Image (cartoon, rainbow over all chains, first blue to last red; front, side, top):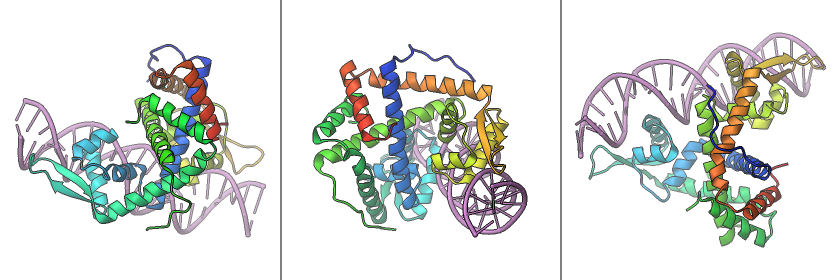
Length: 147
Length: 147
DNA sequence: TATTGTTATACTCTATAACTATA
DNA sequence: TATAGTTATAGAGTATAACAATA
């Protein structure tokens, strides 16, 4: 069960930053989760819906993107299909694959959720000045997760 | 299903910041989730374990802190008790209440997880200069989630 | 042979409703 | 009456293993 931790221990300032980063991240994800629940979506399903606004991935691509097993995606997408949010379309190039797309209903849902995420998190960043917001945007970009 | 979004739409710069904040938050939580999985802990259980390092909450307090129903906490804690990670101790002041504490094993686990979170996220903040790290720490504090 | 996706199975997580015990 | 906690139940989410169809 126990395994050694590789790398040096964090210095004092790093520890504080990591703590703030983790706490803030959980708060943000919790907020998104509350919004998803209003639409009877799990966090995972909300992420799929958001993803499908820009892409038409295969089941395997969805699995990789979410870090889940392919078999988990089958149930996830099938339930969404039953609810009329998504559709599965065969890929003509590779007849093993299915590409997942949003229905009109699913697309409306995606837009509503995105709007609510924006308005729910707005009060958070409203505590910052315009200069601070620009700074934070740059620093988050520098972390290298976005893009 | 559909409901109106209250508040004004975000401006362009805010939209970009919110997007970076949400994407980064999901990446951080995903990283924590991967670490939890190494120890066969769910994200929720890891949060409970981390919480118990500093506190000895009642079942209800745990439920409130995690935003879950009390009945969900029963199963969560009972499974952890079965695994030897936690203990439930009656509160003498209010005999309806149970206070949850870590066992020695649970405490070791909590420490290991915390160390792994630190070393897993260290590469992320290593991309920043010392000045940028200090800046980011201040900005996250200004968001008002920590503390 | 390797990959895509599904099925069968089992377990965790979660909520709702109904309940007991204590306050 | 109100609160703390549990139980019973049901459903979603997830992984593992075995499988079929296609590459």
